[in-house]
Image 1 (tube, rainbow, N blue to C red):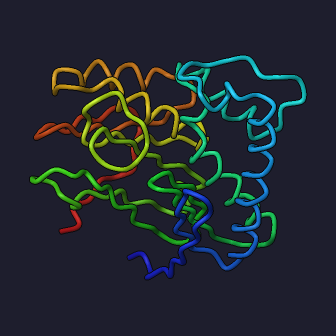
Image 2: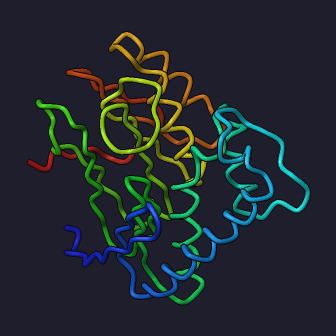
Amino acid sequence: MSRKRTYRTFTYREAVFRICCEEFDAVTAEIIRQRRILGDYIARHPDFRKSLEPLELLAGAPEVAQSMARAATLVGVGPMAAVAGAMAQYAGMAALDAGAREVVVDNGGDIYIRAVEPVIIGLMTGTADLGDRLAFSLQADDTPISICSSSGKMGHSMSLGECDLATVVAKDAALADAAATKAANLVRTIEDIDPALDSIVGIEGIDGVIIVKDERVGLAGKLPPLLKIK
């Protein structure tokens, strides 16, 4: 059984983070630092924020922008589709560098995890039939891992589709975030699920994907075991 973890909330600008880590201050400091670095770069390269397609970086682009741009190029979306995942992973890795044994950083549904004990990650489908009943069951040796989600019906992020939930699992959180955005963009009807699964699982670096639309749930690739939690 996974133990009860304590999560703290950290809000910075428009982002709300849920963080479980003994090195909480290291996590929050890195969020602020990386957002400043990215903001300085965007001031030099405004198209980085606005583009809905991959684009070339300016010379001297910081590591966070490079990570987001790589993910965007692999997936075929704009680099800001990777920002929440990138921030979660950079913040989590800073905590590990500071000596934390375990860290969970949830940036609005884009999650980076390094666990030392089993952990359950709930999936908010938004559908009447499933509600909040689905979850991934992770063992410590499944981590570090990133689990990122997007939806055409929930949340504030831009989506071009009508997907209830698209969740992608990968080692790289920027890539998982960008791919989840793409998956959600591809789904307007249940007939779109299978082609979207094939498209996303074929991206280099993606472990697995789950897509929920109305009464249909589609799975592809290698995913952690699914649980019903209610």
